[in-house]
Image (cartoon, rainbow, N blue to C red):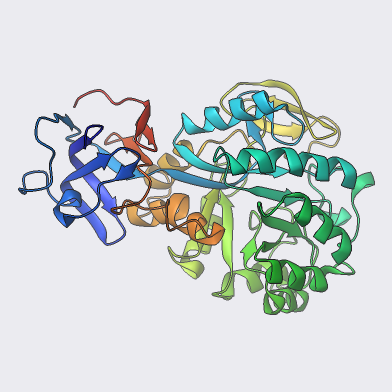
Amino acid sequence: MATAKVLAGARVVLPTGIVTDGRVVVDGTKIADGDTSLLRRSREPGGVPEGVPAVDLTGHWVVPGFVDMHNHGGGGASFTSGTVEEILKGVHTHRLHGTTTLVPSFVTGETDFLTQRAGLLSELAEQGEIAGIHFEGPFISPCRKGAHDETLLRDPDPAEVRKLVDAARGKARMVTLATELPGGIDSVRLLAEQGVIAAIGHTDATYEQTVEAIDAGATVATHLFNAMPPLGHRAPGPIAALLEDERITVELINDGTHLHPAALQLAFHHKGGERVAFITDAMDAAGFGDGRYMLGPMEVEVKDSVARLVEGGSIAGSTLTLDRAFKRAATVDRLPVEDIVRAVSANPARLLGIDDTVGSLEPGKDADLVVLDAEFELKGVMRKGEWLVAPQQA
């Protein structure tokens, strides 16, 4: 264990609960395997490599690295249109905020453009820089288009959906569709057969149409509440269907702009801690600053950290990072820390099919972790055993 690291004294959040005065031993790129005391109390004997000093994290939290399954960019870089260098810059920006695993998301574009971009990003996925690709559009409703170019929207023809999935060379993780459109249900079935998440979003579906899509194999609600009809008492629409079905995990953008706190509480009340995934839906300005940006072909103005289309004023993604979403959930929404960890790490990792390596602190998994202080401010980030943000000794 020549490259071992020992973190001691923190409150460590494990799948089984919170261990106070906990200890985590890292061996190379992994959480050390073997002696289960490595993830128990700091003062318990056994398993600590001789001669390796411990990083004292008394008064801090150690949680799994964050997993963002819906993210359009950051650090001034766009995942839809940026160069490889720009994409890596955006990925690194989010890593510095605790997101050790990230799935870049595309916005609506021409098919040939999206297939070319999918090929480019699939190479980064093969290299382990990203965890796959999410196509948000072009198969969405013009009635709920949000910050997507309406002239490029089209119905979800299964043949075209298959073309995009094939272009990603096995790295397509999710496709967001308005499943009520012609071809929507058949496309959901196709995606389910291919092992790709079919996500219901940017939709004008009725309650009944949403239930049909869930029965066909849809498993995710893309940024629940946003870009879909509001909940009605006579026409409950998609929100009621998505909240009540245990097969659906709901994405939530917890930035204080996209959702009222009561809406977030409603989602957790119905879904519990196991069926919520916090996402950023971030665009280029995340971790970068106010100004004018392009989101695909659409011009966006970011003012006071809120992104809106220059034409029309629709919200255009966010400038959120997951460390901010975590802190807000803990300090404003007052959610249990265990539920927040599930929402930012375990649940998205499970959905993406990568929970064998990331998403929780367990022996043998990647040493991806985040250190937070008592006020839930980020103080350290480790990815595959290397500090990207090194914490100060407590």
